[in-house]
Amino acid sequence: MSALQGRRIAGLYFSGTELRDLLVAWLALGVAFTFFFVNGTAGFDRLLAAGVVPPLLVGLLTAGVAFLLHEIAHKVVAVHYDQVAEFRADNGMLFLAVMSSLLGFIFAAPGAVHHRGRLTPREHGHIALAGPVVNLLLTLAFLPVLLLGPVVGSPVITLIGSRGIAINVFLAAFNLIPYGPLDGKTVMGWSKPVWAGFFALSVLLTVGLVFVGGLGFDGPF
Picture 1 (tube, one colour):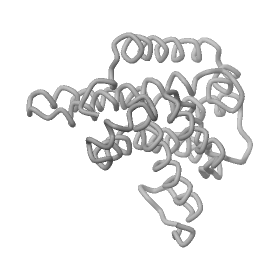
Picture 2 (tube, rainbow, N blue to C red; picture 1 turned 180 degrees about the horizontal axis):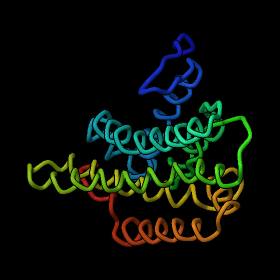
Picture 3 (cartoon, rainbow, N blue to C red; picture 1 turned 135 degrees about the horizontal axis):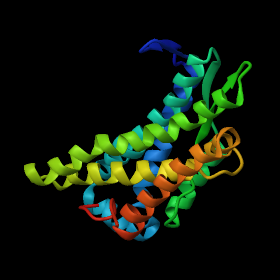
């Protein structure tokens, strides 16, 4: 992975190091959320019965995509404001995400997009808010997948849709917590009303759909 070459994708330049870090974080979060949704080590029998690979692919297509587009959204807005911006993985936090998922809960803070240059509080806020907003928009993108599953009679497609929605609302709510390096602290520093509106929406969706409705936890694995 260290041999990855930098390249321009959709108008954005990604260095070899950045591509490597994105790949490592994508894989780690895919694994972590796969364990989380089967209740950690208690659900190993379900993973083995499913053949391991299909559940992992679902994790990569849901949690992995949610993470990648969240971080790329930060980068896009930062570059829009003339910043030099690159994602860097936090290997310690990735390890914590996987280990916590084995215990049946998850703490997902895989790294961050680092940028340099002069910015106003409003621009900082826009960059921080971009990730959670993309996660909320992705819930709409996964909704047709959820509805398609029963139509074609595929529990796996239904699962991709339900977990895609569940993971994205969870990531939006989690990242908007106004604490430490999370996006919420920066957004709140720019505009408390904007932060409150998006945080309330994300928390309500997460509680209603995931913790009350159980979205994402039912399925073949």
